Length: 183
Image (tube, one colour):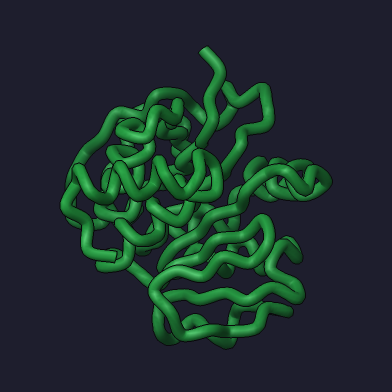
C-alpha cells in the first residue's frame, strides 16, 4: 500500500503532535503511516505512551505527499538522524512534497535549508534556530510547500492545514466539523 503521509517518530516524540494528526489524516482518507527512526517499531513518547510504528525508517522506498515531524524531546534525534537528513534533502528536490513540522521540529527542516525564505513558526524559545525562515507568531503557518506549527495545543489546526493542502478545503472543513475542532 502506498503511503501519502509519513509521520516520523523518535523516542521522546510529543504524543499529541503525532497521534492527533494521524487520526485526522485517516478521517480525511489519507494513507498515513507512523515511521520509526529508532531501529525498532516500538517508540516511546515524551509522556510514556508506547506506540507501534507501521514501519521502520529503513523501509521507506518512495516519496510521500507529505512528511510530518512531531516535536517534543525526540526532535533532537530527528535533528541528528543522517538517514532522515538525506531523505529530507532528496525530497526537497521535489517541490510537490509538503514538509510539515510542529513544536521544536521546524529546526530539523531549517538545518537542511527547507525553511529558507519561508514564513514559519515553532515552539517558543526555538525561534533563533529557524535558519533563513521568517518567524510568524501563529498557531499554524503555511508557506508554499511548508507547514509549521507551535506545539501540542496546535496539533489539530496543524493537521487540518495539512489536510486542506492535500485534500482541499471542503475535506478539511468536513473533518473539522465531524471532529468538533476549534479552528
